[in-house]
Amino acid sequence: MAISREDIEKVAVLARIQVTDEQIAGLETDLGNILNLVDQLQAADTDAVEPLAHPLDAVQHLRADVVSETDQRDAFQALAPATEEGLYLVPRVIE
Amino acid sequence: MHNKSVAELSRELESGSVSSVELTTHFLQRIHELDGHFNSFITVSDESALAAAAEADARRRRGEATPWTGIPLAHKDIFCTRGTRTTAASRMLADFVPPYDATVVANFNKAGAVCLGKTNMDEFAMGSSSESSYFGAVTNPWGEKRVPGGSSGGSAAAVAARLTPAATATDTGGSIRQPAALCGITGLKSTYGRISRHGVIAFASSLDQGGTMALTAEDNAMMLNVMASHDRQDSTSTDRAVPDYTATLNEPLKGLRIGLPREYFAQQLNADMEQRVREAIAEYEKLGATVQEVSLPHASLAIAAYYIIAPAEASTNLSRFDGVRYGYRCEEPKDLMDLYQRTRAEGFGDEVKRRIMIGTYALSAGYFDAYYLKAQKVRRLIQQDFIDAFKQVDVLMSPVSPTPAFIQGEKTQDPVTMYLEDIFTVAVNLAGIPAMSVPAGFVDGLPVGLQILGDYFSEARLLNVAHQLQQATDWHLHQPE
Image 1 (cartoon, helix red, strand yellow):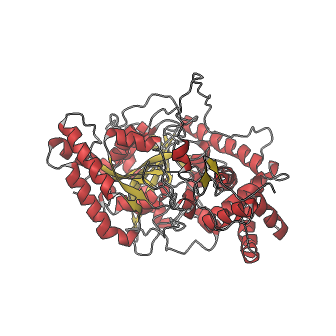
Image 2 (image 1 turned 120 degrees about the horizontal axis):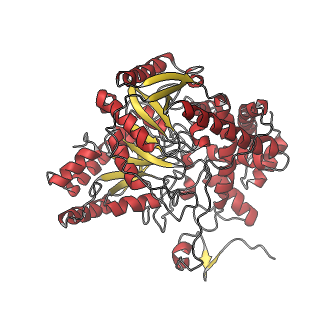
Image 3 (image 1 turned 60 degrees about the vertical axis):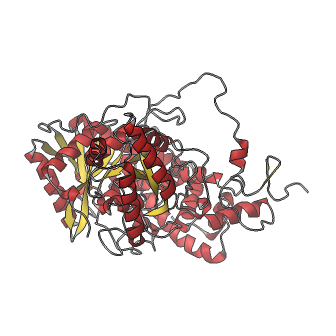
């Protein structure tokens, strides 16, 4: 299946990845080839087959509802590109 | 010293003929002398390694040693190491120093093992050649300009070059087995849920699984003894008891039923590779095993299902890299959207971006049923193939890769060519079963791997089967010049 320039631009916005005009041409070829590969799936007879999301029939483990984590805000925020007074900084969102 | 197995080094530490500081110094020296050729390490931790070695020697003197106390090893740079940068071979995380240890790392630390450093890989484990690393491509010790396979190519190359006796790795679609095969070492991908994923940088969460790399099956068993654990920090971690994987290595193989999936011996397999694999299987017949052909009818659909499911999960997992909380951030963002879009455009490499975009596409409105849901249905068919096969046989054997190590740059132009490298490995991850790669000889001087696949939680059996081959043959002891 071919993927159009418009599709690529739309997907790039959804994925929050900036793409240049030159990159779109390459992506048309590469993503088109990948979609051709995965289109083999369409030939499979999957009527009455339940989707498999996860390989094991596992159940979630439950734990007591008690505090188990300690506050490590300062350690975690030390990794951030920009913080101030315990807050993560981003460009102004509200004018 | 560097040609010895973990088991041998462990005995020498126990006898006192060598100390951990001596061993660690020796391997660090080898890394500094030789790794310029291979680029198998992203970070070498001289200082912390020597401190850990001294502590291990002290612990041994106190009589509190485990078999791993003082043994050097390397971690794939996808396992978080507290205080040591963990990059996933991406610009996005080039300066990321985790505030915690992955459970696998903590388990090894608790056992007293010494971390030499962090190994190179494909960016975010997406690749089959270890060429997509932000820190440069890894070279296979068996051939100049040859790839080591991927994504755990740094771990495989480092073990093959005897820069470390063992290395951890992860396998989402073949990322342990294929590099182990291409570098002539022994590797094991465990059953989904057997090894904790806590602190492993996520690629595709329903497929990702940790595993082991070393020269021998026995060493892989020793590693798995430490790595396998129930972990409440990973909601998919199993609470099944962990056996001593070294205890059953010497079980006889008489009566072992081996199945050869006919679909894995058909198309795209290099004739010389097939010859080596069949010779290894003939060794098993000498050991009393029986061989029969079996069928995995949906094998040809595995690549297509995998290359929907893995990118779909990746697109979700990698949405966390937003330039706000940690990791790379672009310069001078003009607004929030610009911050996200340029951070991700500049922080991710080409293959990672392709997979995020394919995954986003497959999950987007109008395409979800045709791609993602369809792939999950095919995934069940593939799982059922294995369930049926293991009613007839104990293990399956096949090649690991269609060809030996290829030349660097040969498959980077077309992503689909690279994806087909995974043709014999991805079905294992879709089903969640364990599998190994074991050295099985050479084609034109390049190593060939035999893949051994087992039913859920049959790691002890797989290691036993691999170990017995290594008692009868010496393919695993050959080393690159």
